Length: 131
Image 1: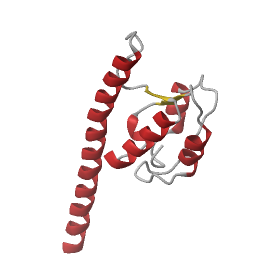
Image 2: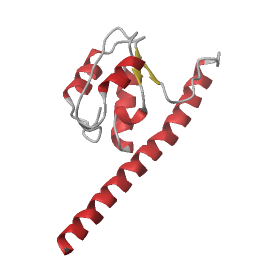
Image 3: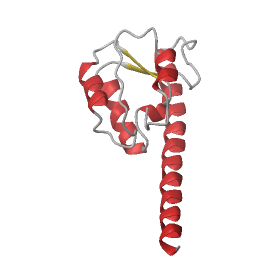
């Protein structure tokens, strides 16, 4: 959840069957979120890190890459609920390749959206100063 306006309940409902739940009520633009750091420290080989949307992990390409690398280096798998599932692909290498390609596209989209938000904020501030 990245702001007070967003509801944690929707995300919690989608994650109701997970074994261990980590929730931050801070912006995904900040990689130093306490629960994110706890989750990254907690995961072990064979774990599945499940998020409702990729931007719940981070908003810029560099942060997302760092988080994803940490997950993969620990032998865990990232599963993003709003992305196409690759579980039907038998070859684990092909499944990982396809997942990574899709995630790269979404990382680009998430970072682009973050830049647009910042741009709109700056435009609004500039307009407010002119008035």
